[in-house]
Image 1 (tube, rainbow, N blue to C red):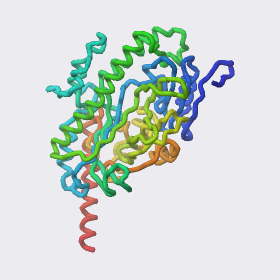
Image 2: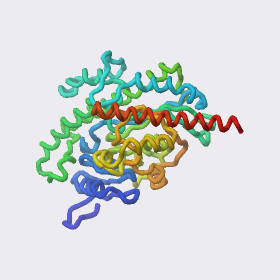
Image 3: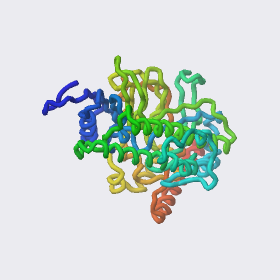
Image 4: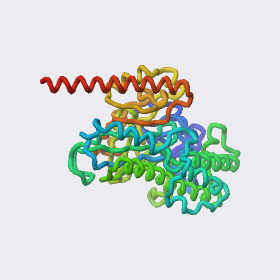
Length: 423
């Protein structure tokens, strides 16, 4: 332990990356000042969050912090590598587009009229009233993708070696990002409010870091709810992938997945600690994970190096370089369409707040964490679906711009094909 200027003990914390959001750094400093904190780490994609910053990793003793886990409990990414050659993608793009549009739902509160089935609904949901009261909501939202930075996309996966047990070359792959939906958010809010009531001594700037004692009933109850949401989030992805693959008549030759926004029990020397990874990917030695960029930048399949200084963690994405509000004010759909055409990406729907320009360059983030993970494959998105803007009028206008951009991309490819035929 080290001490701050007031002589209080502060947990050590190592930071990766440069030019990080100063508010994220301050939040991490605050988290490390908690009496339960043992060690911290800040990833290169870090930006401001609730309580713990996005990209924050925090080890504590005998406690769990709901907002250090995150609002979207157990949010995860999943990749299915398909048995369809990538060369067949362009001529069948319409079929892939229909699959993304019909086999999942995007947006706040979205649900299926006829709920999907999955064994997760046979788990114990009755260990507390709050969780049990959310079961019907959870069931209706099974297989949905939510809003924000959640996505479903097809793209080109390039394997440079056979590290994944597959031959070198290019593959068509499906990549999704979503979590525990409205149920997870309701659980996070309930237990965070409870933790705040139990710790009125915390100053205002730290009250979102209120914790629950794992030796007490409230802490144990939250832990059970968090683990259930881990299974529920995995079930969402299971259903999305299986539904899309069934629609296509395709088979997955390999599946990869990992989650963030969770707390794990781990050993730190001789001491057992609880490691919170809020927007951070587990990167234990040899652990395979997927780190996405944005709709117009690559994702990377990685192998963890088990760096103990980072509590065996890595970035979970590119990380925002500006807020959603700032992105909406700064960028327009013409800017986005030009970039997508340049990158060869077809966008089905999204909000302008998810414009790639609002994110850091994923290549720089990966370069800043070479001591945390090694890259073993690259995935470039080609067909992307995210939640559309909420405003109906804007949505219609934006969809028109997207369609015009997609048409421009098609015509450009058509001209390139004719040129190659003439030569």
